[in-house]
Picture 1 (tube, rainbow, N blue to C red):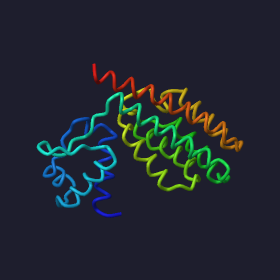
Picture 2: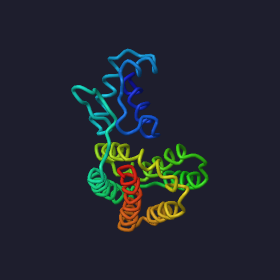
Picture 3: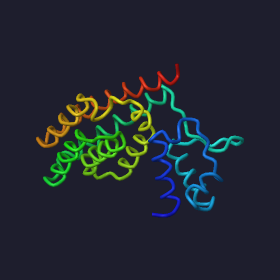
Picture 4: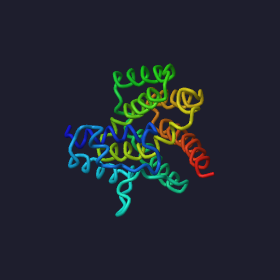
Length: 210
């Protein structure tokens, strides 16, 4: 992984955690000092985040963390439902016993996670394990980027993931459909799960707008 890729990953983490909130300026001088790097790889990292929809670049203000509207959330989740529903439908018949066992373990650990950071990490891993076998790397990359755009709003909600039994039940339903090899059921439960997440993210957005 190059220096710019490492920096992009670090900045994604800061945005996801809220350490760099909506509208925050990414001041190259300050960030270069913080990460002890030159501005060239930092500028490349910021450009990567702009391409992913996490950052906006303005002529006079420089780069800022993008603020999403309710309309943005609608668009993002519509795409997520298309991409993730299709991914799991194609992956189900290719999932092996080792992957399913790993997904079961991650699901259990998610229910026991004590911090939002750990919850977010395990949540990403759970879905990534189940989607990976779809065999379409471009599709998986798009899924990761769309998820990254809304992750910070999910983390604002203290009731999300392991703190909400409903989300663990939804994960369990998805997992059981995969274990049974039922592609239609896996698709349906994934769409239901994304719809639940969308409702919570929209609630967070509207609270911030008011």
